[in-house]
Structure formats: C-alpha cells, structure tokens
Amino acid sequence: MAIAPQAVDRTAERRAAAPRKPRPKRGEGQWALGYREPLNKNEQLKKDDDALNVRARIENIYAKRGFDSIDPSDLRGRFRWWGLYTQRKPGIDGGRTATLEPEELDDEYFMLRVRIDGGQLTVAQLRAIADVSSTYGRDSADITDRQNIQLHWIRIEDVPAIWERLESVGLQTQEACGDCPRVIIASPVAGIAADEIIDPTPAVEEIARRYIGSPEFSNLPRKYKTALTGHPNHDVAPEINDIAFVGVEHPEHGPGFDVWVGGGLSTNPMLAERLGTWVPREEVAEVWWAVTSVFRDYGYRRLRHRARIKFLMADWGPEKFRQVVEDEYLKRKLVDGPAPAIPAVPGDHVGVHRQRDGKFFLGLAPVAGRVSGTLLGKFADVVEAHGSDRVRTTPHQKLLVLDVEEDRVESAVAALADLGLHARPSAWRRNTMACTGIEYCKLAIVETKQRAHDLIDELERRIPELDVPVTVNINGCPNSCARIQVADIGLKGQIVLDSDGNQVEGYQVHLGGGLGLDAGFGRKLRGLKVTSAELPDYIERVVRHYLDQREPQERFAQWVTRAPQEALA
Image 1 (cartoon, rainbow, N blue to C red):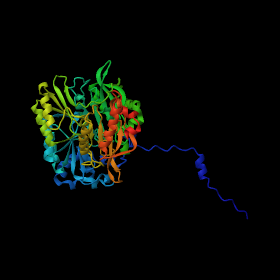
Image 2 (cartoon, rainbow, N blue to C red):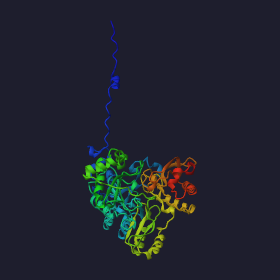
Image 3 (cartoon, helix red, strand yellow):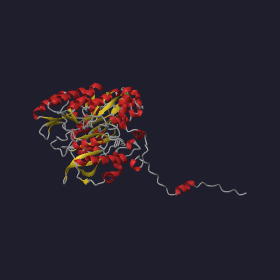
C-alpha cells in the first residue's frame, strides 16, 4: 500500500511571502491623541487626586499625627507640589544610593523650597525666611540656581506654622516642585539695569497670578521651567529652560521678547530652539499659556525619562511646534521676529553697578549658594541700614542688594564682606556652583557644597592670578541640577577607584561647555575620572595649561576645542 507523503508545514513560508504589516506605534500617553489612561504610577497618582489638594491633608492630618501617618503616595509624590521633599537619611554612603528603596533613604525631615518668582524679595520677606530657617530648619539655607531658597530639617508638624509665617509676607511654597510650572526665573536686575532692553516683571507677575496654583496646569507630564529676561547678557540661562522669553528689539515694533522652547539638561541635555516670533510684553502670558498647553496635551507621559518638553520639540521641530501653538491654541499667527544678540558670556551681575535711576546695586557671591538663617538675618540688617528694602536672588546662586546711594556703596560693600558676602570676589568664588549633594539629597552620590568650599579656598591659594571667568560646576549625581554640561569644568559625582583600587567619591569630568557664544555641552574625556582628593591638582593643572596656551581674548571653552588631549587629562 502506498504511503502518502508527509505533510509540510508552509506557515513560515507564507509569512515570509506576505507583505509585512507595519507594527503599530506605541502610544506615548499624549492626551491630545486620546491616551487618557495613566501609563505609569506617577500618572496614576496625579489622576487619583490633584496634587494641590494635599495641603489640606498636611494641615488637618499629617501635621497633627506626625510623620508615620503620611500616605506614601503623598509623601513621595504630591508633597512636591507644596515644595516638600524628604531629605536623605544621615549615614548612607553614595555607593548605596541606587540600591536602596525610597523608604530606606527617607529621613523623617524635609527639604522645603521657598518659591521666589523673579528672585524678588523685600527685607521683610528676607527676615521671614531667616526666621523660619532659625526656628524650624536648624539654621539651614541654600540659594538655588533657580532663585529659590531651600531649607532643611523641617518637621511635618511645623509646616502649617511655616506656611503661615511665609504667607504673611507674600511668600509661598506652592508648586515649588512637582509636575507643574516651577518658579519663574527672571533677570535679577529687571526694572533697574541701565542697559535693559525691556522689563519682564509685569509678565512674570501676570503668569504667576493667572496660572500658578491653577488646576489647569497642576498636572503636566513633568516639571516645567520658565525664564524671562530683558537684559542683553541673558542672565537667566535661557538655552536650558523649557520655555524662555528673551528680550529683543524688533525693527518695526520695538522692544519685546523672542521665544525659545525645549531646553533642559539632566541625562539627555538639549538646548532650547527659537520659535522665530516676536512677542510684546502684554502678550507674554498668553503665549506662555499656549506653549504650556501644548506640553500638557501633547507631552509624552508614558516614560518619565522622556516626559520633558525637550523631547517633543526634538521630534516636532520648531516649525511644527509654532504651527500647533498658533493653529490649535492661540487661533492666530504670531509676528515673526529677529534673533537677539548673543552675549559672549552670560552675566551674573556680581560687583558694583549703577542703576538707571543713578543709585547702585551690589552683586554678592556666597560660596556655592550656601548661607544660613543667621546670615540672612544679618544680611537683612545691613541692607536696611544702608537704606534699601529690595534684595534679589539670581540664577547663579548669588545675592543682589538694590537701591544703594552712591555715598553709601563702600560702607555697604565692607559691611557685607564682613559677613562673607563679597561684591569683589575672586574668580573662583564667583564662578563655582554646586547642587545640594549627598548631605541632604536622596539621589546624590557624592558631597558637593563642602567640596566647593574647600576647592575655592585651595584654588584661591594656588592660582590667585586667574583673571577670566572659568566656571566650575559640581553635581552630586547625573541629573545636572548644577548645570555640569554647560560649565567650563563640569563635575558629575560618582564612585570611582583610587590608585589603590578602593572605591571613593569622585567625578566624571566635562570640559568646555557653556552658554552664550559658547552654547554647547562639555567634552567628556574618555575614561577621565578624578577622585575628590585629586580634584584641586587636576583643576590647577588644566587651568594652568589654559593660561599658558590661550590666544588673546580666547575663552576657556574655545581653548578646549583645540587643546591636545594631554593638556586636558
């Protein structure tokens, strides 16, 4: 009997011959495209309850029942919308940062961020912050590079009293953190600088009044950073903000603002791009609303690390972004505008400068923003004694005193120097910044503030003749809160091996980053990692090579692009 041939499975052949169907693109969680269901726990948390509502629970429950009563989703989520982060539990070394669960890193104390839009403070407000620091925060205080002041060692039981004290003088902590519009940074010399193109203060105030604390923008895909300046030296780092309004003179319409969108650093740094528009001051808040709405509705919510507006801008490009702003939100075309002139080096306003009204402002340099409640109180005394009621914080961790009469300038400079606040600092003190670091931050791997202090002292001794700005930015982790990629010398904290093979605190080095004419990200030298102990030697070596090899007027970042590898190592 004949045997039938064995059946052959032709499935694989048929699949190969058939045209491939394109794989559907995975949704990015964009609300405008119908993705309304939360795609991660952070989005679920925000959908479950508007984070602004947590204030009532803090006041009525947690402050009365203590730390152990706090719901974890509030503690590590919604508290941020009111400026509160748990700080790092003491004694946990940097090598364990990424290996422990959040509850293992949490201390029962908080960092509290005081929101200071535009960096503008009165003496009464300064005293209130000093009082809170001294009474509730173990005298801690740091000026951030976003014009805020951060306090530490805050107990949940004391938060309502702190809010009452701050709000009595017009300060707040609302939306100082969280997936919402963070503090609006603005030129610290807004309204007073003799060479200002346009004063952004009315626009800052309108944005804050209309939108900060509004449920309209209390659930954005990620944090959202705004900067405004009308000063020609671009003193708010507009290149690395989510949205920036930069003063420019239109040949037909006069002073207004150029709009930049999509800047940011962290582990995927990008520079903001111009939309090519000119916006008058009275329309800034409306354009801010439209751009922020685009981010809310089209921003990527699926993955946290891709949720910043810079990723949307990178995919769309400025032309499409502007078109969506105009067609879907503003319902009108924006005026085309010129690009502003780019400064060689962004300004920090340190020193003694004449105001447009003939008085003077004094720009002062604390060490890497580290101050204290006691120091702020004494600072307020000196300010008031010299006839001023206005103080500004800056995006470079500096302090300004406004409205000093000419005949009182030198007296004020001397009195402030006695407090350690120098209007004529060394180049090292003036140009060194540092993030919070392992002392308080749960993400940090290494020490930063004390490292900056010691480094400044050592470099002032070794190279006192430094006559040009060389920025040194020290960060405790890869997230770049201290802007390491846009520093002349950027130091990213990590655990490294010393010469004996031991794991110690150290830094990955980035060289030649900058803003202004040098806008770009630092050169990361392959394999170059420096231990904390080696840091002064390394920086001295590199800076001396620069001083020896530079061409006339050549900036450090320019030199780095042409310097041989051996001069940088």
